[in-house]
Amino acid sequence: MDILKFITQFSDKPKKHGDIWFYILCNINNGVNTLQLQSIFNISKSSLYRIFNIYNTDINNNNETLNIYIDKTYIKCNINKKGTKQVKRKEKEPLKQDNIYKQIIEHLNMQSGKKFSYKSNATIKFIDSRLKEKYILDDFKKVIDIKCTKWLNTSMEDYIRPQTLFSNKFEGYINESLVSVNNNKKDTVDKANETINKAKQFDWEFDSKS
Image (cartoon, rainbow, N blue to C red; front, side, top):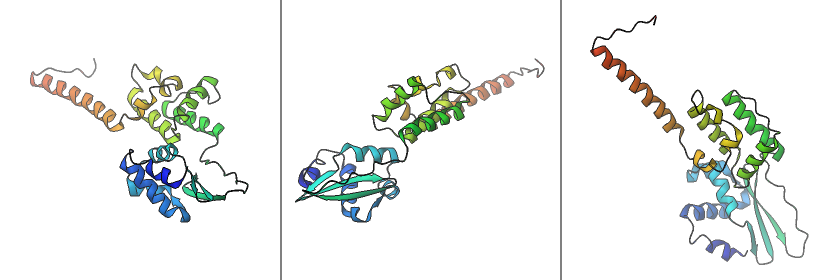
């Protein structure tokens, strides 16, 4: 894709997408720190990675091709001239593919107290489906944390399992808020206390031994 087409593709996209890429292109020679981008544009790591992966990052400029990619926490650029053998870039690797299953399931087991296997073919299948949608490790951990907070010690506890958490409802789960979950628990406690206080107004006695 030539640089003009690359720039014009942002005309019908959210303004933040264009602002982020303009910043990257202006600072690419020095390597752009992804943590710095998160701070400047007030954006989460997972959202930044998804924005990055939406667009074609091989940009043609005259007789050169700029291959822009994420290397760990830096966005870098390889320049390849036409007629020369293209250098195969190293893929971004915060996690090896066989390692991400282990980290996800270990986090699930730690939060839930269960003993799922990361080698299960069914579990791998569900995780792979979400990885293809560009979700990353932190997204899986967020869903696990939300659902364990909400479902542990309730009638929904049996649904704390890979085939439920990492199903096609994953997008809905990840957009739930731990704040709302904690508020719901607080509301339940408040209602219980209110009931007790009303009972006390009628001089009901509570036998601690009963």
